[in-house]
Image (cartoon, rainbow, N blue to C red):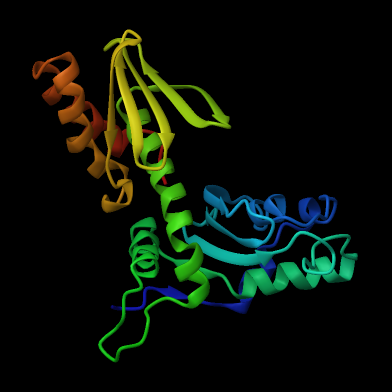
Length: 251
């Protein structure tokens, strides 16, 4: 498998110190620091194992269009988590280590490809694992989060509007007024389609099997066509194709 990322110590120059330094310093995943590491970056996905100790991983899009992934360990107290009550100097070192260890990709498709290799524990021709142990451990979680992001982008391109989201139980709801469709994303890969709040039907598929949100269109349009008629499928696909090139919803 061709290596499609680089690591560079120039990444520390992009750290958003102004926002990072005032953040609360706590054990349990330092989610704020992970998501806010780079100035002007857009968070594509963030994963936390949500256990008393474990790993966190984040994918962001930089202002220059590159995509970056990075991960870290966390604990439950100051004895096993360096972020708990860290000094300013310690925070600077922790952030620089994160930045200098980040994997930099040119596009999101390559990120997804790498995380799939991590999830599947893929080996290269020499028999070595493509991804490190750390990414094998947290790659699937971050891949699922990116899949959620792509799913939301695909719905937005089709004209769906975000309504609400909640973490416990996790769900995100989108609606399309013209087609009277409601989409409820429950967990990674599981979503419910309903017409006017009725005739609910649950679907389960691997969102990460699609390289970007545009390729979700054919799959989703077939599902929606079963709900509201085949005549809408061509319109839906054409609308999405136009939106792919013209919409401001870009990654």
